[in-house]
Length: 329
Image (cartoon, rainbow, N blue to C red):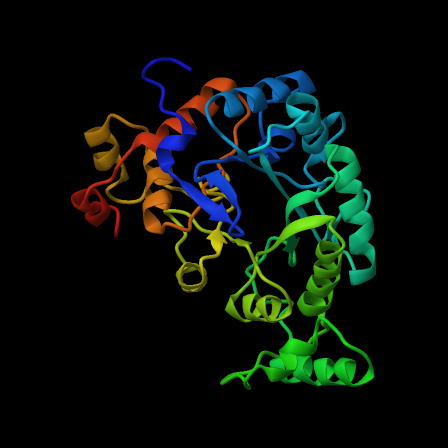
């Protein structure tokens, strides 16, 4: 690390799940395998090692981040194992690859153990620090919510026959506007992951691509340590879920923190703020995320060591009240 290169520690840290201290600027592994410039696994290994050298100790991955020889899990294990004591690796389960590169199916509750065990094997871990239940595809959250009336009825049936992780849901109050009936996609599958946590295979649980109702469903079953949703400077529709996370001390981890190549981040004011700080628009977008709430953890991805350093440098940017006012539009 050069003398003027900020470390990820400059962003401060957050107690993930209450006991895992992670620097608030981490690394997302998707671009090691998908959508980046890497063509050889060794290039991905170099990117990961550079990130760790710069103080990153929170890496986000998934078993479905892969194409051919480029597999995020394997690059992480090859580049970082044996893992340092402070390294936190988060992964996601739920989506299923059915012969292609993009997930097209959703795992049932009964299939989740196999996915978790596969992640353990591929990452070379005896437990997983954080596992998200990734809900649905690339659409907006909410498609797999269940009506709370149906969920409470299922919980009552389960608790009458035998103790169940769904039992606490029976006590939830009736919603003001119930969501339409659907299968127990969130509750049943989250309960399956909670059982794996109780068995020591998982340390903390999270949910991804969820709305406020789905977050409440999950929290009624087991503690939620993190939420990973679509949110960035150009896409602020999830402010309500972020507020729930802040109230509860739950980490909020935006995916596509720089737009993911799908949405622009050059909102009004970004260029002016970047010029004032001698920064890039992407660095300003990351600094804005970190300033949005103390529970936000940023996980920008990269496919080159130099770009990793550029992203990590955003940890050292402190936005002023005037900066935030310029970025509010």
